[in-house]
Image 1 (cartoon, rainbow, N blue to C red):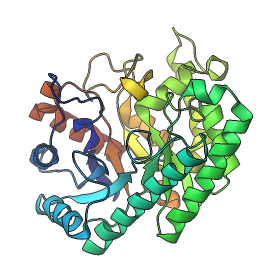
Image 2 (image 1 turned 120 degrees about the vertical axis):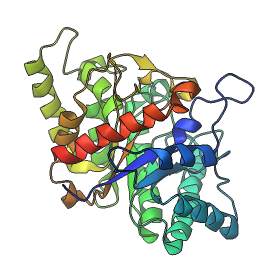
Image 3 (image 1 turned 180 degrees about the vertical axis):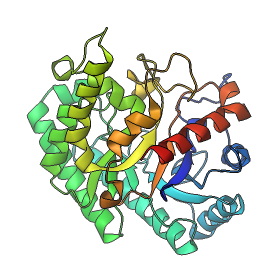
Image 4 (image 1 turned 90 degrees about the vertical axis):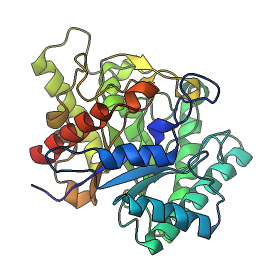
Length: 336
């Protein structure tokens, strides 16, 4: 068995959750408790990937408060891996291809994430992982001026990359079809090439999101498959996509998808995450993951993380959910 660490994401307790509804945010303490309790034949999660925003974390928290969070995570016998920078409008950041103030806010979010990463690293709870970003702007906004907006994204990401590199960090841009400049596999590749910093700014592949790349959601011109495709057609298309993006892939999310899109707010029309053992799931999780993780060591990948955004709270509170996810992640580890 390889040495890849298995992580659970903390943000499913936050993304799509709203106070005063039947799906309120789930506290960091509870998410850690659920993660630490999972067990498959003695195998447990090695760590968590972590969203740097309220209510789990104040991105301006003092070093003392951040060390208390690190102590809490370490006390659960877990490490911290990739950190999600709060790059979106309404958090710290702003659109990476917006006006000058928006782009300054985007860079500020990366600065804050790097500061927290340094504190976690010095504490010892974090030994690997990246800083996760996206463009923080919609497809419709990007489509108003594709060439000009891609240039702005590249310039912003280059500046963000310099900030990260100065902190000894790398930036992983997650390809989701809801983010302009990242909404198809071809556009994602063009954006990464325009940034041109492969050592510092790479790709975060997510099985659920990248499945929709194949189908051309939000970018029909880039579709590699049509409904009713055969298994042979699927793997041929998957090879094209992964061969193009794998050299850039520095971070990886295990996930399942049922072929539908789902989202709320700014995450509208994005890849629907399903439970790992969902009978409607379309992906062979272990086999699909192996396409992305070929030669993963050469790209500095030391862990993989489950992503299951927008699950109902009762699903997240069910111990079976986390054990099924952990079992799937073990299958990925064994397949590569």
